[in-house]
Amino acid sequence: AASALPPPPPAQPKKCVDRAATLAFSPTAPYVAAGTMAGAIDMSFTTSSTLEIFKVDFDGSTELPLAGAAVPAPERFHRLAWGTTGIESETHSLGIIAGGLVDGTVLLYDPSKVVGTATSSDDANGDSAASGAVVAKLNQHTSAV
Image 1 (cartoon, one colour):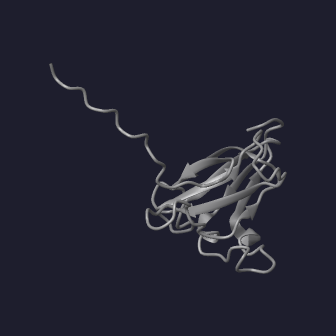
Image 2: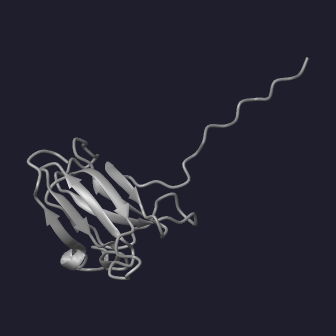
Image 3: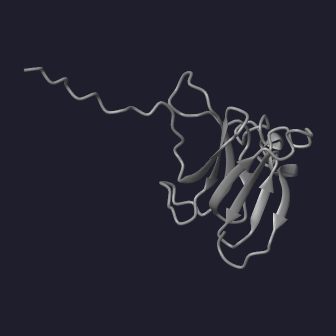
């Protein structure tokens, strides 16, 4: 009779982001966008909403590093999508991130305006990423998107 192999050890996470967030991966670069998820409560019980971009790397710690400052959002996110619009013409070198919010608004972000900006620990007023990151605000829906 053949001896049975022991079960493999449980998979260990390689990297994590300690957020209650909806995610979208960049289609062309090593980044992941995280938008504060609607209907979820994190450990800090905060009511604020942000869009953050993390650099996907597999060096060092288990936490993914922020690629730039957090961008405040008016509402929490239901969905995020990261597309390639603008890459070919270089108007948006990292594409466009579309975020569907709780109130029905769709915000379009230029991630190239966020990546590389000072994080709040580096920037005293913490709003460097907010300037110019929102490309468009669409208010065509009256309920969650």
